[in-house]
Image (cartoon, rainbow, N blue to C red; front, side, top):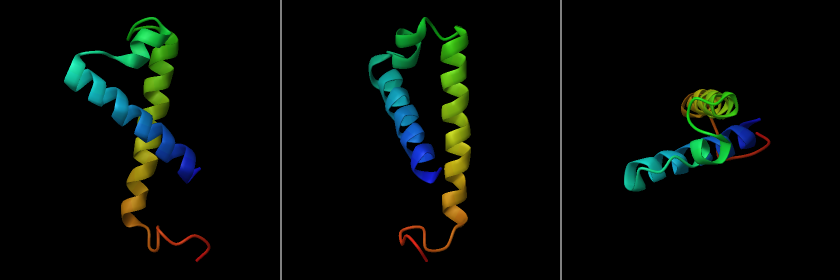
Length: 67
């Protein structure tokens, strides 16, 4: 779950970078605009993944697997 959340958060960060630098929303472009159902689902899933990643800040030994 952590890896999936991190991958989705990275995708979201890259999309925001594209929006900030080039004013190009890749998710909206791929899925039919910001208001389309699928785009909204993608935005929601990425947002939830970002919230999950906040828990990384409060975990002990996040860099060491299996402890």
